[in-house]
Image: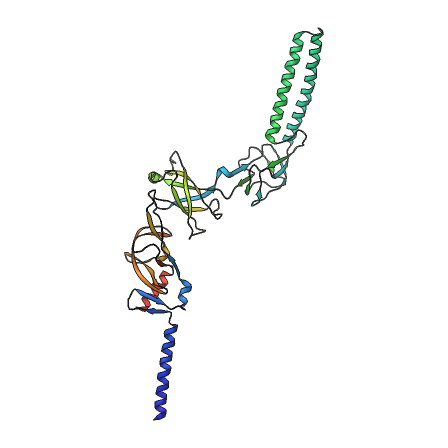
Length: 371
C-alpha cells in the first residue's frame, strides 16, 4: 500500500515538473484574444522577426516612375585625340583616380611631327622676311630701290607673320611646344575617376573616332533620368522633390530634385525626359535602374510600410503591432496605395507605433496554430 502511494506521488510530481518545464520553454503562448500572440523572451522566433517604428513620409504625387542613374555631364569629360597616331603607353586604367593635367596616354603622331615642322618652317620664314624688310627700308632710304619694292617686302613679311600665327595656334590647340617631338601626350582635363577606356597599346588612334578614348567623371555628382509618360507631365515641375530607390539598397531611400524637363515629347514612346539631381551618399552608380517617386508639393504626410509587413486575407490587410515587448496584436489597416516594395496606409496605424516588418507571415502562422 505504501509502495503504491509512493509511486502515485512520484508520477504526479514528474507530471507537474514536465508541465512547468514545457510552459517555460514554449516559444508561443496564446492569449485570451484570438488576434494576439505572446512570444517568450527566449523564443527562437525573434531571430526571424524585425520590429520597426511606423514612419511618415511626404505623400507621392504619382506612382513610382522608371528611371536610371546617369553621369552628371557637368562633371564628366569624354576625351578623344585631336591628332592621328598610334598609342605607345597607357598611363591610366579604369577605376583610377586622376587629377586635371595628369598624363593618360602617350602616342606617336606623325601628324604632330608635321605640325611641328610647319611651325619651325614658319618661324624660319618669318625671320627671313623680317630681315628682308629691314634691308628694303634701308635701300629705300638711300634711294636705291623704288617704293613698290619696299611695299612688296612688307606684304611678304605680313604673310609670314600670319603663317607663323596659324602654326602657333595649331600647336597651342594640341598642347604642344615647338621644342617638342612627335610624341603626343593626352592629359586629363578634369579631376575624377576613369570609368571607361577604349584604347590599348599599339592601337591606332583617330580624331574622328565615334567613341572617346577615356571617360572621366566625378562619382560624387550624379543625375537621375526619368522617361516621364505624357499623361503625368502635369504632375512634375522644376524644383520638385523626389524619393529614389534602387534594387541594390531596397531598404534605403535617396533624395533628389527635378532640375529640368524636356521641351518635347518623343513621338515614338510618348514620353518626356526629365533630369534630376540626387544625393547618392557615395552608393549609387551610373546605369543603375531606379524607381523614382515625385513627392506632393503640398507637403502632405502619409504613413509608409514595406510590403513585407502586410498580411492580406481576402479583401483586407493586416499588420502585427507590438503591444508590449513580445506581445503582438493583429490589426486591420486600410491602404492608400501599393507599389512594388512599399504601401502607404490610410488608417489603422499611428506614427511611432512598433510593427513587425519582417516575419509577419511567420507570426500569422503561429497565430493560426494557437487558435
